[in-house]
Amino acid sequence: MDFLGGDFLGGPQPQRGVGVVAPFDFALDRELWRWVPDGISLHLTRTPFVPVEVSLDLARLVSEHQTLREAVRALIAVEPQVVAYACTSGSFVDGLAGERAMCEAMSRAGATESGGLPSVTTSGALLEALGELGARRVAVVTPYTESVTQSLEEYLAQAGIVVTGREFLGLTRHIWKVPYRDVVDMARRAVVGAADCLFVSCTNLPTYDVIPQLEAELRMPVISANQVTMWSALRRLGVEAVGPYQRLLMAAARRRVVPPTEVLPEVLLHGPEVFPQQLPPLPPLPEQEGLT
Image (cartoon, rainbow, N blue to C red):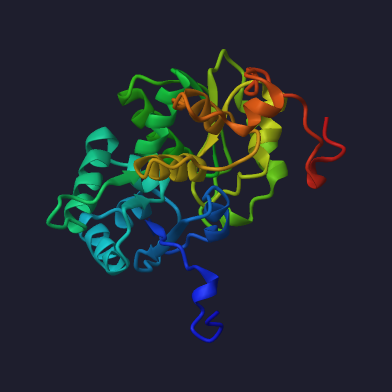
């Protein structure tokens, strides 16, 4: 056995990469990783700093096509198989046509002899996720100002999505510091109509742990900016995102076609009904204890 040569280790295994372009103030790298299964690596880069607070102006600055092209070119040396633009406002600020143009610019920037690099944006992934869930009426929660929140509503309206209720914090900076408690409070106030789904906007707003809590309480799917971004990017690789008690991910697993020779472990353990339509109540998050 060749201990010095390391042949007995049998690795490392080949990795598959997701390139991520994020705004300069993005602070939740670790949250993105929580949706990523083993065998997939994230390669993050950021847009150049600009001295502008969170606003429609900033959304346009961090999504300029030249900025996106340069960011993607900074990633292609590590050969990602898909690239994701992780910013909600930057990808909805110019509507459906603007979002499509962003994907095209990124795809061309990462093109190889075999074709363009598959590209997604957070706002494009949002519409993809709503389609997966069959949701046409959506409650919306954002940390943004009213004008930025209104721009999100206009984007959704272009796609035929009705916003049934909304809540926003009016923040222009330090969004990543918002606690789960504030997200929960906003969600409860936003769900006032007959919504099919709740969307929590902004990739800089922490949501991973609060999604299952809200789904259990509100009895509806809850999706967030970072969740849909990772879910959509990983789909391009034929890989499922990971996350407990998250309806979007469970819906995707339910729709996966299982070859006749394959039996999922959870079916062996629990039978075929492993993805209930109604999720059981979960214990409260530490900072939610005492909330009614």
